[in-house]
Length: 174
Image 1 (cartoon, rainbow, N blue to C red):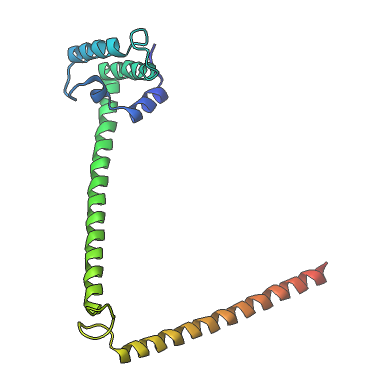
Image 2 (cartoon, helix red, strand yellow):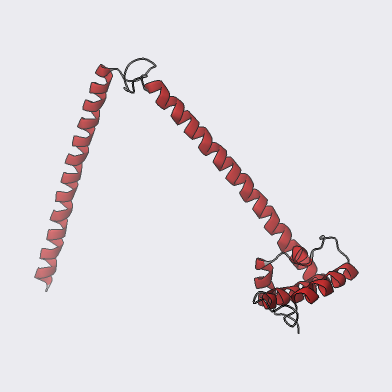
């Protein structure tokens, strides 16, 4: 019985048909038939009582059907090549991302070491913050925080006023 397209696609997502049959992607028809017969004997539900044997046997049947049909095989090979290409691209991207992360961590560690004294203080030698700079930095941060809090309070008051005005106009309309 021929498998539906959806069924073939589902099985193709789970298995690489060539690996399932233990074949190279250049295998000819006779090699495919031979590999299928060998694998089918191993996983046939009458011979193998494992609960996974039925699923594997079904996948083997679909793999055999696809690889023996010229049209289906060309379609499968195209999808498989695209999948392999995407996987390689993703691995290269992951490698670059991992390398970038390691580089960033290394630079952060170096910067942290430059700012710390041997006793653990973060001021002084090595280009770190001096006590005077630290005080100015803290006062600047505090001023910026105060300005931000004030701005947020003003925005909050304005939004409350707008909301109250809408509620009053809605009450008058009713």
